[in-house]
Image 1 (cartoon, rainbow, N blue to C red):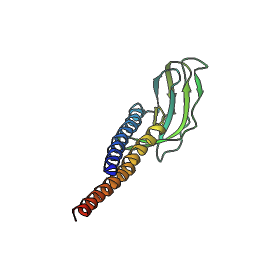
Image 2 (image 1 turned 90 degrees about the vertical axis):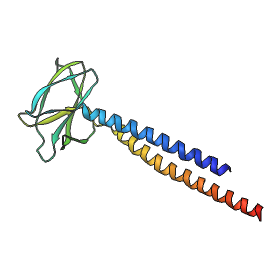
Image 3 (image 1 turned 30 degrees about the vertical axis):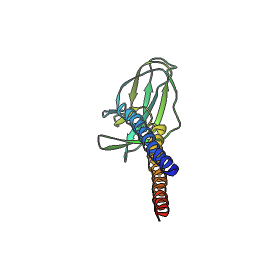
Image 4 (image 1 turned 45 degrees about the vertical axis):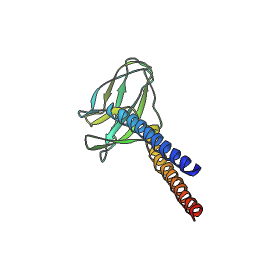
Amino acid sequence: MILIIVGGVILVASVVVGIVLAVIGIGSTAGGISDIEVLDSGSGSITAEEGDVLQLYAEEGTGQPVCQVAGPSAGAIGEGVDQSSSTTIDGRMWESFDSVTANEAGEYIIDCAGTPVAVGPPVSIGGIFGAVGGILLGVAGGFVGFVLLVIGVILLIVRKRATAA
């Protein structure tokens, strides 16, 4: 009977927690992707808050463009993150090639000499790991809970037959 209870609790808890982690991870990743803006003309302005990371993406298969980023003041642009990421936007695959950090809030002008670019936050690695981890937890934990539940039921049936005989 204890195996049935433990198996059921593990099964339900793993699936529920796994689904919650997966939804949170997918939501944070999708939220970041929706913040990416495509500049088809290769130039435009982006509004950023202090501390925001602006990652520049080039369409897959195109050469890496040479871009100039200008901030609201001379010291507004800081070092970007050392993260490489890729994403799909409107059926087009984009790969990151550079990033900058906004040291102050304001408008940032991007000029990539006519080469289309996408600009936005880096794709959330934590969100991706959360989604994958949630799915794995739900599947693996659910499997373990199910196995314990089945073993508990089998042992209960065997015990009832042994006492009936």
